Image (cartoon, rainbow, N blue to C red; front, side, top):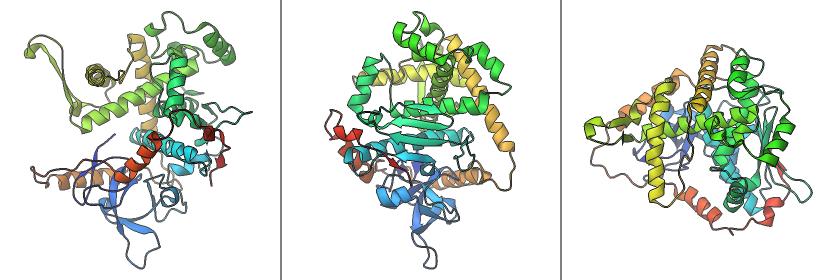
Length: 428
């Protein structure tokens, strides 16, 4: 994830910010050019609730309806777009019951994780289309709470990703992590795993990749139900760590793919974050001359071998930082050569899909999120930032408005509240 800057005062801006905490300007993420921008009030003859984005040459936008009505989104919608919801929110099929405060707070967390997922998909130039754009095969999300007589299971079926709202509750999620013996369980991890199933259907199934996939991951045509029953009856193989990124990946070739896909997104997003912060890690023992210097600024997402080589020293450093704070390892996994081969395959599938997406030319298709316009905007912002005096004191890059909501979520009772079991609402 990139670290952005306010195009008015050049203070640091995070992806989730609603306003600049230095100058107070309203901010929004512009998905068409993949950047954060100050939104200036539009001229009088423009439509109500319209703004000019200073980071995109004054182009007209309005805020997503979920931003205006619920303060649940910070993405903007182009003025010419007939949709009231942004590209992220229009993918929702079902949302929680917002009349219940606990469910509303859970929804905020779900949406934040989903936006971060979509940002990575856009940056990787993967196809992201709604079910309206691609009937029967497009992507949609259902955020559902269980009821006493009806459980909700997180999963994916034919492009529909369902996330159990209870997963947004920290005590519940930690309890499940401990019960299932997992090293890692987060909302973002759920999204990354389930989107992996979606892209298996889209990019691997019935494609030239299928035989290579089966050679690496196994034959997906074996009974999923039998594999599931065996996994929860007998547990993973004793030597699972030699071939899989996680114990759950050993359950079935589909889950092996989804877990490996999720790890690829972990690596991609974390390395991009390291790159934007200019992290450098000196790896190895002995004299400084014998140590290896890993510079995140030199990370190249097109070069898998370099990504994998740089990833290990970065995770060792990040894990050590967590241990210094008494926390569990940030990345509690070991990547064997077999796991790396699978990750390399995921990389090749993604790069192939990105290249195919770049070659698509359809006059009735929505403009690509990866146009030259995005590069022009990024270059313009870099030039503007060069003029910030070196001795400027930058304020703490946080969003008071967002923090108040986060604090409200964390101040809730640690036990799972019964309101998480209220009925859900269909997204409008």
